[in-house]
Amino acid sequence: MKSDLKNIYNSLGISDEVAEFGEKTLESLKERFEKIDEIAEINQLKVLAALQKNQVSEACLHGTSGYGYNDMGREKLEAVYADIFHTEDALVRPQITCGTHALALALMSNLRPGDELLSPVGKPYDTLEEVIGIRPSKGSLAEYGVTYKQVDFLPDGGFDWDGIKAAVNEKTKLVTIQRSKGYQTRHTLSVSEIGELISFIKNIKSDVICMVDNCYGEFVETIEPSDVGADMCVGSLIKNPGGGLAPIGGYIAGKKSCVENAAYRLTSPGLGKEVGASLGILQSFYQGLFLSPTVTACALKSAIFGANIYEKLGFSVLPNSTEDRHDIIQAITFGRADAVEAFCRGIQAAAPIDSHVTPIPWDMPGYDAPVIMAAGAFVSGSSIELSADGPIKPPYAVYFQGGLTWPHGKFGILKSLQSLVDNGIVLW
Ligand SMILES: *Cc1c(COP(=O)(O)O)cnc(C)c1O
Image (cartoon, rainbow, N blue to C red):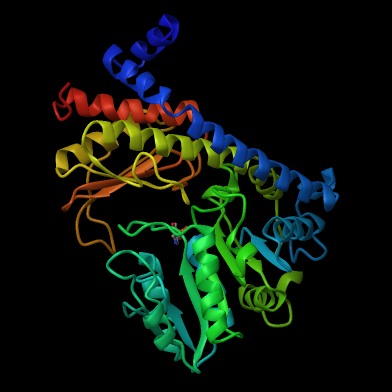
């Protein structure tokens, strides 16, 4: 390692040992990183081609106010998303407040009383439990007479084909497929696995709507779930596709009829996509989307670097150091509470914002144990930015994700390791 770089790391609290361990670990990752750069290159060109095809102009970056009729920038942005996802239409709005909202919107607008929703991939993301009504909740789908069925993965992690076949019935209207493992221990689905699942389901019932929760998955591969039969792809703009610049927002890309339903629910029957002022937000949406392929690549490199560092040190990591990636989340199981806390303190200390604050575990609504969160982000709660959190309960795992740039992600991992060393948890 070059001594001037080492000096800089030293001045930021990284010891020679930690810095050198990092460099050594990196040596084995060159080929992996090249593959990630190739994917980013393809996705960068895909985004660029969509911007050019739609003739996005400077005027598109400015916003409308009031009703937002004829908002050219908003309409073109939605056309750009539809081109990237190869879908008939898209809804991309700052009025969609987060990922949960985008998913709830897609579900509530496409389901009617008496319909049934099926998850063939086990329990959905925590916040979706209340949307569906798995946990009783005001305004849930259950309150509107939409029933829910779930088929879990088999013990070996595979799809329960027989169980899925048995679960599809005349009421089944919509199938929800979560791509990312989220904060569970199952594996993240590849786009091709999602394609297999969708064709299996459509073979049983061809008119069922297949929706994919695409959170954390965008631009990790060169194709998206809509390329393999998904009727809707849904996600958050403060994750991958916002590129770190979008300060709010969500998207639904899919079949015209599905997107139309969502638009009539988001605004009003009769108004649909025609209203919704973009105010001054469109430049951040366009520019964030433009940066998203390379930002996602940086987050992936950071996750892989972290997996390799901590696997080498004997901790269990998911995904492991060598397996293919289908989202940007990295789990590390430490087996002890003080390690989870030390790790998060290290990530926080590496942040561009609030690096001087100390995260501590806290009781949070909806969780059954105290949770510690490290986040020093430009956009509050943005998890495409370097961030980590862990519930303080066995198996004492921490989940980390993001990193807008690779040097920052690398520094965050080194800081987390330094914190574990300084607290006597990692012994050389
Ligand atoms: C983040 C996430 C959500 C919910 O998004 P929020 O923006 O936090 O509401 C849903 N599903 C998955 C898989 C996620 O990762």
